[in-house]
Image (cartoon, rainbow, N blue to C red):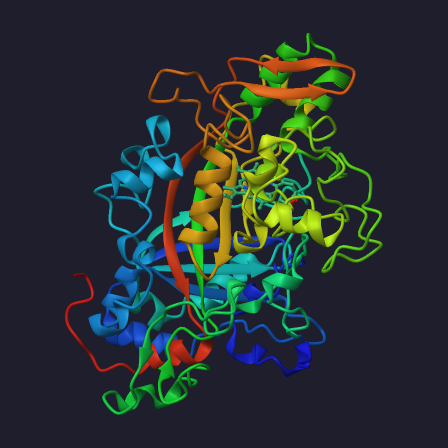
Length: 507
Ligand code: HEM
């Protein structure tokens, strides 16, 4: 058996293992390569934070990711680029079908984005800086050397703000994450993986390792015979004669999501007739957790792999609540991670299992509608922005309006199967797990279906009576920008830095 200490953390960027939560201040920069030679020289010596544990822990951190345009600007050959995933190569915006699937329509459409949208250049590079409170300016100054300033053009600094452990609506965030199985303790055999597990194969977030299908995700592998520079790269696990450009790298999805905090709380206050307790309950049922992060379900009686027995905020699944009377089926967290296993509600003898495998004996028609969640997990690394506004302040008619929101970041090995699937099938879709006419109450747009059926509703089943329906839900969140990036391993960054000079970086 492998131990997590056996894992080569020193080639991995730190963000894959740590959220840098202690480093409360952050600064996210969108950059273009202005001078290819200077950019490579800077990258060759960049103080990138690795995923190793140090004592004391670092006081600052730096992570780097590139868009496909950025890899091209550094001179990475097309023969290498073409083996990245289609989504990464074509990008988040600029494709109508993708925009529709992601819910980037109406006010969310890329033509209105502040960056990364249609007809706007996708930034070459994303630089993520983190520091202890009060130290971010000094850290940025240290990073932005003369060479850095020559190498890169600053396109934008994305807003970020430390408002504590909450997101701008006021809910504790960053509670539930997949537990990455660095030590490869868990079997990937689907016959032995019926129920929900929070342990996730490394290959679901890091390229070059086996994923939950026991496969290696397709990625650029380089023949060192045709490119001697590739000697620097680690060998591909499944084809050791080839070098693995993407090993220890991950796709980084960034979406700037504006949140209408006064709009959210004033709508809920209105619907609740000004009753603060009812308002809180409705908000909690839309999120799927209370504001303090506590779940709406009691702890599961049986252990859940990958969740500690004393992790009271996470030790639950939705099996005891099939009708959604405790946590509505449409609540944000239940959509984003329905906590299902490979079999719908596995229980009973061999014969009843066989019936379920064959698709017979379903009692409720929604039982078989949600795919197993282990193929659709996201490692979230977002940061909030905008000034803090409490719900009590936000309900007042004169609540100060300001730009607030989330720089949503997730790390995945497969953008389409993980981020795009969750966003499309579970968050934005008007049909989910037997629900109709509603999309994610927090996140989604409210456009009607093609046949005119409205989707601006939210249903709260009530164990004691009929389902309560909240109608005419406004859109609370709008997309302000976004792009797909690749966050390489350290050896791949050294490889990029050593590439021979090629072409014009601005092309
Ligand atoms: C401004 C936008 C968003 C807000 C305010 C928001 C808010 C929250 C909150 C309060 C939680 C519960 C705390 C936690 O478990 O960490 C949560 C969980 C989660 N959110 Fe979001 N979220 C946003 C965007 C997104 C997006 C775009 C996605 C993915 C497409 C997403 C996926 C998730 C997932 C996977 C969880 C964990 C669910 C679980 O494992 O139980 N969120 N979110």
